[in-house]
Length: 533
Image 1 (cartoon, helix red, strand yellow):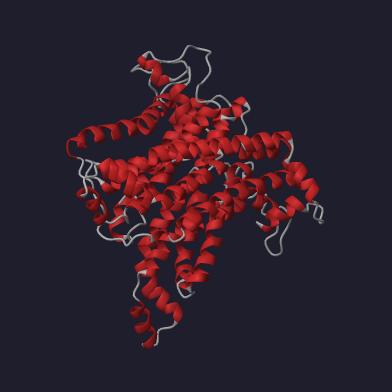
Image 2: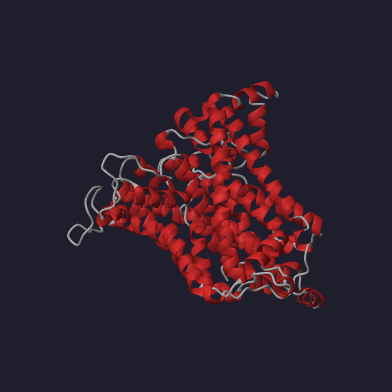
């Protein structure tokens, strides 16, 4: 981050704030900044409208199937943004295979309604609603039953209790959820890349990508300045989130979680929940699957036209896509393995620091994940472009992608293990020390076995997040080092949407299988590691 700031304000070695301000004041930068703020703000509002009702229903009611609904709502967070954007593009476009089967496809030659501002805001809301859901569920689970029962005993109806008691109590979590959704929108690249760039609706991440792709390293001072601006916007949102949650746990004394009985509204509300899941998740997934089963756009899907040729092409025949699958498996698997093995000693060491230092070091670990991926990618380019002692230059190598993945997803591997290590009784370590066991032996024989399930879960989370990642690798890949996210984006840009859909469906299958594996681990993990349990 320091190297990035230095390149932005002092590209020639001397600070020049006038030139820095001039780069940020260019018409393209100002327009992209407005687009970024506009879509991120309204996308966060839509995410609140989706995530808060689901959090209340899953956490505080007796809604039938609420755990399954919560699990399904989290799926958009686990699926790459570019896959989500591709699914919705193929759902509503004039060449939509699914709508064509139903006779509802728009007229040939008409524009796709998902392109542009409205489509980006809609998908920001869908993609970031799980973030709101997770944050709100943490707050709602702390609302004691006594508060709700007191309101009910005074004659208040459930909606009145929810409006006047529950939501005011969890207001900090509402603000924090909105801030997190806003930050996620500021740094999102996959959605505006597929929905905005075709109609020249650029946000800051896509403007950075476009400048670097068009002009190469010669524009590093310009894109460094833009990256600092994106990072500053994201950090402002994180500061709001941190301030909102400061002391939030002390507003109430958590007791037995509050519950509302829905009575005769159980089934209607359950049907409404399933309808929403069907519209935002199942329908786009079906559109993506239907597109992947036709030989080309415009061909209606039927028993005679359905084919798996697209899957054969991308999984077996096409060299670039086969290479991308291999690279993504290696990069994501390497980062997951490296972090799963490394975070146990790190977490054990952090546990010995006092609370203030743990908070500081935890913030440093969170920083690469908090800032937008495009900012981290530019920082990696600036840091590793010139040769460094011992390692040389990592630019345009596979190592820079692996290092960037390790930086970005360290916090995903760290949090489950930190929770698990914190729950290990100190008595075990002290008894081993009294018996003469050294620090390394205690780590190997006590801490590591007890924290291993959490490390495996963290590794799976890292693999899922890195497997079809696009934001970082879009700027760091080089010839022969393509990843799935990059190839999917390239195929869609080249008009090979049916093959891109086949790749997207394949990645969704991988994510769902990994989620099911994580769910099997759920009983052996500390509480709160898996948000749907």
